[in-house]
Image 1 (cartoon, rainbow, N blue to C red):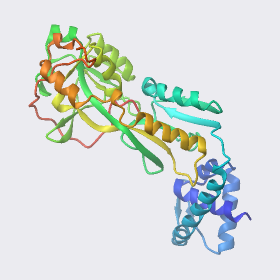
Image 2 (image 1 turned 90 degrees about the vertical axis):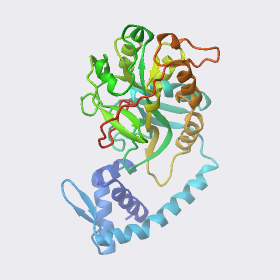
Image 3 (image 1 turned 30 degrees about the vertical axis):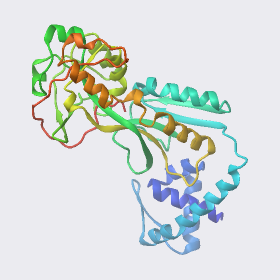
Image 4 (image 1 turned 30 degrees about the horizontal axis):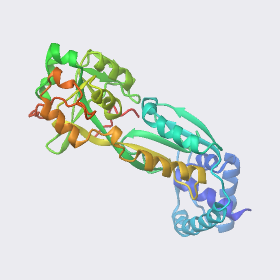
Length: 351
């Protein structure tokens, strides 16, 4: 028996909750993974897992062995990776997952990294739904919304601001909402959530807390970019994620509204699997993306911009004209309405 391989399979199975996923993670067959665990249990004289058709959980002996074995295995893998680091090149395949709706935001950074590392080959998977990254062998991915579960390491790159917007043409015809409650008399758009197929509630910051409102939609779409286009073309007021709203706000195509109630508790996350060691190409990509995209002002409506929009007026269509500085000022009437609190739910962030 290869003891190091068997212990590695055991540690990964405990972390992932599945022998099948541990096998995929280690690049071996499920049968080989199961055999490794059985041989390890036989050699130790103890049962390490409770096994059912749907669940894998540690026994008391398994928990003790995991606590004792994991630090040593991590130290061994770190020593092995350190010895390889000096000669390892930034090369080889890398599979990246991201929502289609975030492609415009991440593509410049991805192209820049690819230009600097021509020995890396890229497999880009675009999907707005969360998938099983372990079985699909995803190396690294970007998601917007709430952080994923503990099986993945998630590094927050920036907040996602949810900004209520309307076109100058819509405001000229219908006026601007004076409050959150005033949205009920307006034509609004909606985003159909990929995981439920239902229209996402709108999120607002109110009294230091996030509140939610179900806003009837005259037009809904399952793609955030399509909803943004509908808002740009005057079909209604919409609440858009900052990476769709900001280019149109700064070019004067839409006007931000209800600025006192912009919610930003969601975020853009760089996610990757927990491993005892990461290939150099993956470490390099993660470090690059954190440096390149971390709190990038290109995708965040700054306090100065918000102040400029407040100063320009409250929902006036004429306020959409961009100043010489490049950031279009815009409207903001102080919203005094109250909202209905509900449990936190990820919204139109594009993930």
